Length: 328
Figure (cartoon, rainbow, N blue to C red):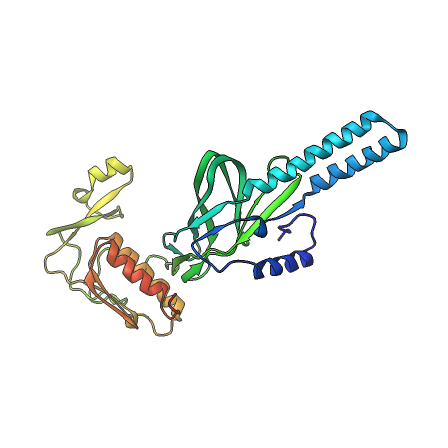
C-alpha cells in the first residue's frame, strides 16, 4: 500500500502513527479536530515550488535583480497563505458518527458520518478515509454541516468496530497536506455470508434441512409474492406486481393444513464446520422470509418460536451473526 503521508518513508510513517495514536482521545461517538491534533507537511508539489523559489531568490541575490526579489517574495507569500488556508480548512471540524445498518460479510458497511463547523463557511475538498480504505470527498459550501456515508469493507461476522479515521485536505493549491486522525465509537452488525439457495418453494417432511412439514404448495390461502420459477401455473402470475416492477413474479399459496417451517442447527450435516452451518442457516432464514413463510429458529443458545416478518428475520440473523462471539 502506498504511503498515506507525503514524502515520508514507511518506517517513519509508522513511527508517526504510533506517536499520534498515543495522543488520541478515548473513542466516542463524536470528536472535534483542534490544532493540538492537526498536522501538516508539504506535498511533493509544494517541495518542488519552494525549491524553484529558492533558486529564483539565489539568482536575484547573485544578479541583484529587483524583479527576481519581487517574484520570489510574492510566490513565497502565496505559499505561506496556502499553508494557512490548508490548515484552517479542517481546523475545528466536528465529526459525529452513527451505527450503520447491518450487512452480510463481504459487503461494504456504510457508516453515517456528519462533518460540521460552528460557523458557516467554505470548506471544500475535505477527505475522509477509514484505515486501509478509500477516501471520500466532501464539500461544505456556505453551510455548517454535511452528511456522508463512509464505506468500510467487512470480512467476518459479528460486531465490526469502525477503524481509525484520517481526515485530510490539500486545499487550495495542493502545496500542503494537513491531516488528523480520530478514533470514533461505532459498530456494524455483520451477518454471515449466505450460502447458495437451499430452500425450495415446496417442502415436505422428507426435506433434510429441518423443514418439517406435511404440506406442498396449495391454493387455499394467499401467502405472498415471490420471483417466477419455471413451472409456475399462469393463474398464479402476479400481474400487478409484474406491471409495477417489470419482473416476472408469482403468487404463493399455502394450504390450511400446512405446518410451520423449522430451521434447526441439529438438522444439518454434523460433518460441517461452524461457519458453513451458519452460512446455510442464514440462507434458509433469508429464503423463508422472501417466500413469506412462518418458521421457527433453533440454534445453541437461541430458540425462537414460529413467526414471520422483518423483525423475526432480523432476530434470527443477529443470533447467527453473534453465535460464539463476545457481546459488545
